[in-house]
Length: 145
Image (cartoon, rainbow, N blue to C red; front, side, top):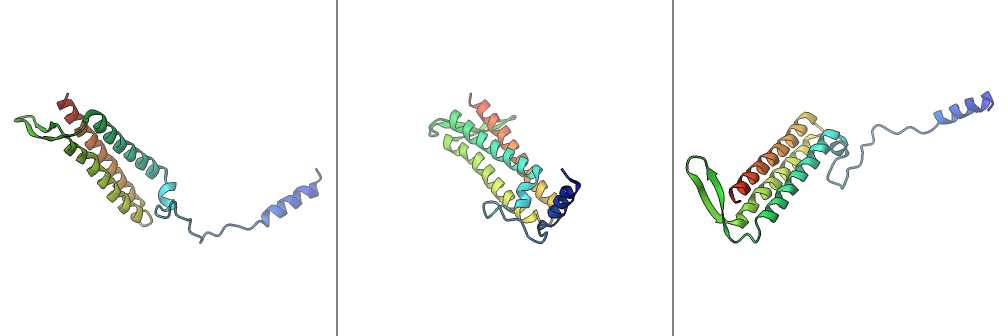
């Protein structure tokens, strides 16, 4: 390869058009900003939160079959079983978790452009609430053995 060929290649590569920085990235699915999904921490927390919520639904669907028979839904260490009702009320726990996730996701999505720390904190709180719901589901399922 001649030295002139290398210099010509370098000159031609320098003439390629540069991407404009002013162009904003297109959103994913038209409601999730790219900056929200491109952050590895946000993505990991969102996936973990959805995974824990799916585990909640699956555990309850497997363990509470039918849902019409009465089961203990609340236990107190001092008084014992305090609340017994139909099993389908147990599905409120993952539904509440889904509502918390949706609300926090909506808030974090709007805050990601102005304050990334607050968006991360809100998504982490969503994951933490799902974990607390999972612990409570395990407690009620242990009570219903």
